[in-house]
Image (tube, rainbow, N blue to C red):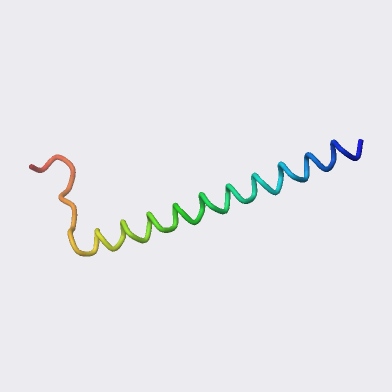
Length: 48
C-alpha cells in the first residue's frame, strides 16, 4: 500500500512539473505574440 501511495505522489509531482512547464511556455508565447501584435497590427478577417 505504501508503494502505491509513493507512486501516486511521484506521478502528481511529475504532472505538476509538466503543467508548470506548459504554463511557462504558454506565457512566453503570449508575451511574444502580444509584442509582435504591437509592432505589426493584423488586418481584419475578410480584407485582402
